[in-house]
Length: 177
Image (cartoon, rainbow, N blue to C red):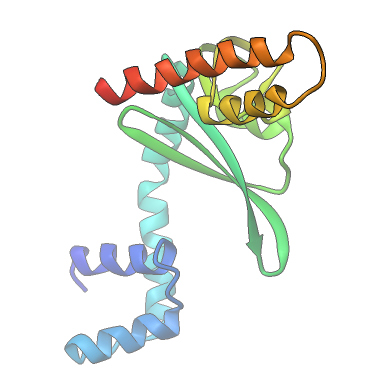
């Protein structure tokens, strides 16, 4: 198998979610290439081992960046709720599969101290850590301030409207950037 074909098969299996059986069927249908499941498994293991040093180097490099976007999402693995975390920035995107949605996962990705700007939604795990600066998702903040508009009280609507105007200005500035 050529290197390009191996790369394609690994990509289709891992990111395209094709099973080994579907991959063998695809190879046969497209090019009458007969490859066994064991060969596909070994190919996947070989490629994983080959890219591991580069991935580890990226994980060491990512916490040194000036701005890192982080997020997490539930991920069902064989019927069990797991969490898929991401850390991304200019020119990179890394994934971290985890059992929890806790701060320990954020610290696994970026360390216990982060000197850059952490961009995130408003999930509580991103608050209160040893982080130099934070940028919260403006869409999430906008949604919260729309709710504040409806709250009883003398100044809630006025304060919410000021923040909504500022957030809208930020969106307009971003669109023209």
